[in-house]
Image (cartoon, rainbow, N blue to C red; front, side, top):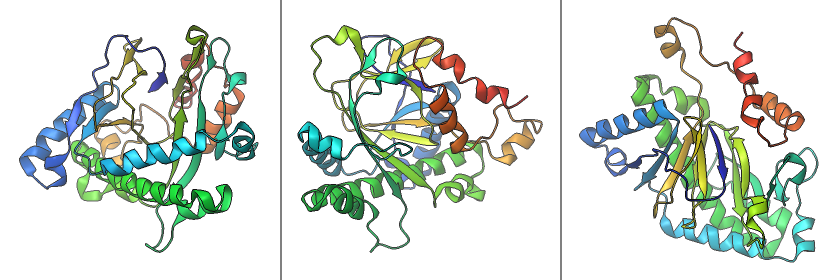
Length: 295
């Protein structure tokens, strides 16, 4: 599902707010109701918001506070941390070469997270210590906890999807993703004196199975649904969820054994985006290459 961050005030998307409290407490009746809401959202466009999700609000706030220190560094310091060619990790300013019209007006910092083999292994802490330096060890500690809690939520959401599809006994998605890796990305949108000339983030489709996004209260997130851009307004203490998942064989077989969408490797998508990465009126049509792979 394509999305962008730009100009609030459009028609709102139907992104239901789903309370996870009952599901996380193993309440069967509440879980059944939650599954129905999730099924409807995923059948429509794959976007919904969750509350009582188990991610500590203090950790989320600390993550925002800590990353501010990085974005407030002098420009030369941030450039020292810039993303190298061929890598998706590190600091980056606007990708002006990827846009045919309005330029993006944002800064990003990205790093990798994967489920560690033991509690003593601190992947994120080590990364911040090694790459950014000792003064960012606290930032690494905050994001270690943040990523671990988000990973736990992702596994819970995969479980809900399994229930909605009737494949919970197989733990299909848990087995598929429990050893996977994640991209942690923080976006900063500086004040712009000529906002009519820029976008926050241009139209794009996430290359991941699941996106968990914390919006601030400024708003601006939009999704492309029913051939229109619609806003997903911020909800206090909620997280925005976007799913992009492979259908289990059990589901495909029950539907005649033919997939509506093809499997593809992350490397294939990355190669495509690097060679067809200008954002303009043809962007969404360009992503129909996925459909072509079915034929």
